[in-house]
Length: 301
Image 1 (cartoon, rainbow, N blue to C red):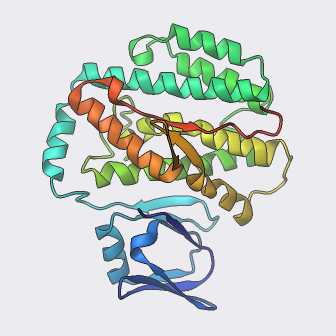
Image 2: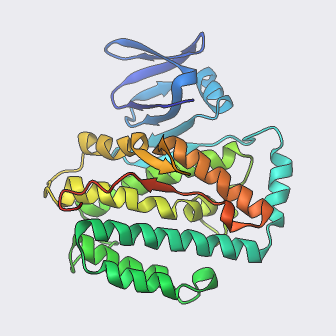
């Protein structure tokens, strides 16, 4: 099982040699390709050989490129994620609206449930209101309980004046974490032979990752809890490399998946597969989610 998340934060040259990724910087380091799940190129002073890129694609390793501000800006996706991608794409196009709506309803319900459980751990009374929203969810969430829950939830976490569109450190941290989760979901979508552009609910013409945007929704509270704990509760005044690595390390967090402990990075792989199985078999009971062992907020249980 691949498990390493490799972050290249300084000037370096990356190349392939005998199934190892060789990182030539101030020192020379070698990492076996078979151990790598994700490579994040954080510095713009990094060069990579085409041979290495080709092997990373072949091994279905997620590669994320960052901009000059060290924020994720692009990712490397293979044209053909698996041997039968043409068949998978035909399946995807054939998913009927009813099962897509049922899966989306299930995903939204789980997302709000995760949010509610986090608020319970924090001792926030707003958890009761989220519980009522869960009971009110209709097919495809036509009454937008998700949107109502989001407003209550974020205000409960970060204060009544908090707005998701504001330019501040909290939103910068949230956006970074969400980008990491989206990238992890996109990796599994393409690895299973599906198209990231064709979503269940999201259908923005300008969004290349509509399906990933759908699937990642129940994973957002993992990011929210980390940002609350590390950056809001502690009132940190910067969001730089060290802080980003804390969020990135979420992928190594232990979670429950189908009653067993797994790292979140691997749990996402299993979760995405369960989504595809549910869509193809038209049965939402086949969906399994990543659940926290315990919310670790300082003011929580």
